[in-house]
Amino acid sequence: MPEEYNISKQRPLFIKEPQDDLYGKQRKIRVLTSEELEEICKNAEHINLVSFSDNTLESVYVFDLIVQFSNFLKLVGVVYEPISQPIYCFVSSDNKYINIKICGQYSAWDIPETVGKIIQFADIPDIVICRFDKNFNPVVVIETTGTANVGNSQWQREGRKLGAVISNTPVLYQTFYSGTDRSQEVDEGQPREPTSLQVINHIIYTIRYRCPSFVIYFDNPKIDSRLGFSHSQPEGRSLIGNCLSLILLNSAFGTHKEEKIKFERIILNHMRVYLNNSVIKHGRSHVRLDNDFSVLTEKQRSLLLKDSFLEDFIIKRIYDKSAKVESSCNILDWNFKNFVNWVPGNIEDKPLIKDLINHKIKLLSYKKGISKVGICLDTSKLKQIIESNYNHNNITLTSLNTSLPTLIFPGRIWKGENKIESGDPESGELYAFRELFALDLDGEKTMNLLLYIFVDPPEGFKYDKFVTKNTKLTRSFKYNSDLIIINNEVQKPYDN
Image 1 (cartoon, helix red, strand yellow):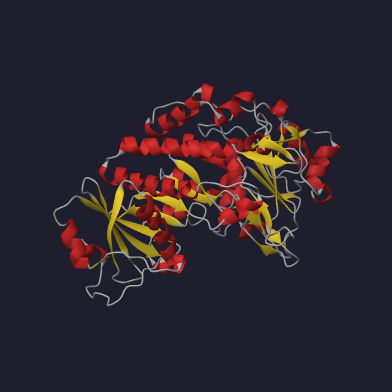
Image 2 (cartoon, rainbow, N blue to C red):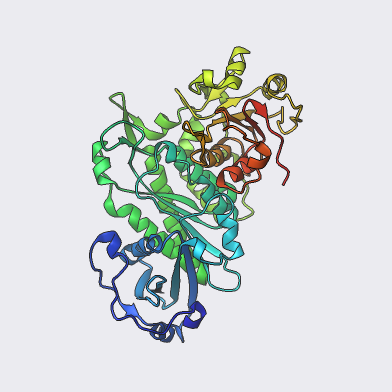
């Protein structure tokens, strides 16, 4: 088995546990040689896995959560041959062994096609754990953050999550209850909390793609205290350590299904508790979901906040591939009468939006105040204005289905005076809002998506050259958009 990993036979004289760099202290851990690992697994049921990651320490950080918190896997020891490619050996209570080799830095490896399908869909995830065999089937994708993703960064990872669940690979997304928005001119940044939509999108992904997609929150005491609350320190860490253990065991040996379902329910409750938490606004306490997403119907609100049968339905969708979407659990059953008038901000910079408003075309928003996207219910009138004022090259507009509403996404992909092209945050936001509004729970299209780039492009910009580039931005454009307007001109659809 060690030979399969191409492990050298030289035993290191001294091991400094890599976690020292994270925690600043020595940790006592059994150091194994490759021969010892081979002997341990020789007559035991075992599986070999590989953890591809941006760097070694990201995987070490996650495996340490198993070491500290798992009730289902115990660390036997670690092989450091070489030290940059450690192999963690875990054992279950019924003496089944899981060996995971860390392969840090994606670019250093020949990535298997099955893993490549995930990382090339939108963007490269922090960690992809896969089997070490001829197929390299992915087992789980993990995203970790050092602080809460708030402000413009909160949607940057959505494409990574989708790349996983579309490939039927579970996603564990670790973030924090709070963080700071450094764009705000406040010492140490403005304290912020992630939006409720983050939880809702994870629930949608799980239902739509029949694959677990979970967000798990860690406490952030320094920032939490600035916001006037505190959270359990071990809760999120324990959920990651145990859920990851159960995903690995169930995938490897087909065991622990009941325990896995139990923890999935616990995590779903953890997510819904976040929606139920109170936030203070203008000196008054509000339910977080109501503050972030006030246009929900009472049915949608009840499903997300308290109805236990939504949880049952989610578990059913994961494990019963024939389970159909139940109308009683349809969290995407919008009532547009609840929506408010769209305020996109800086309308003078957005001629198309100004034209629509001047023509008395109603534009709706999911939240009060300035919001990222708007909804036009009358796509026929929208199409007429685009045809008259923004389609000088007479490009066919059949991609806009006039029987459906249209989600309008204004974006800025060139930043600053030098017009630097940037995929963030637009590339992730496109995935997030399309999945939230433009599809039903079965993945059927319910809205068009119009991408409107309102910032002037750099001098010499050619769309046909831009769109052929293989970047996370162009991948997002091509996957999510039905029609693209750049420089106030309809762009020709890209032909793969």
